[in-house]
Image 1: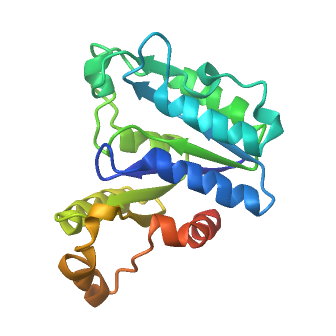
Image 2: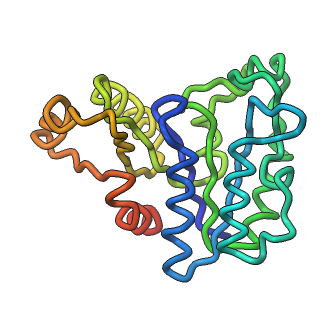
Length: 215
């Protein structure tokens, strides 16, 4: 079985796809065969998966075994409406058999499989499952991507507690953008004082990938 790493976030548009690309490159630079999966993608119009297409292109550049893989192979479930899967699917029951089948096929091609979620941890997939349930279902460790703008303390701690309550092994990575210049003065002092290590996606991706691999 490949090492499974689930990239999740405190919310949507935090930087999961950007982070997943960097993780793929970091693992590949260490000589590991990398693979990628996007279990569910919404906002798919005319069969075009924005996130899935980007991730597949990067993976194909890093692992020749993925050259024959299509975007449909890595995105087994997709919906047109850009909304939570519960809404986008009209509350269609989650097809776990399809997800597990995709997972097993893809991990045969790689040493490390990066699985990118959709939205945050408590995005509803159907009446029974939330996104956080997939992490446990896949027996994966998690990278929680958080933001660096005002409010990141609350968002980070809430999502981290959700992972802790489920006993999901995880690491937190901060995706600081250019407009987040006040993070150093507004939010980081709390993290520093509380002993919460601030590992940034851009600056510390190799450290993050190593920690994740060792979980």
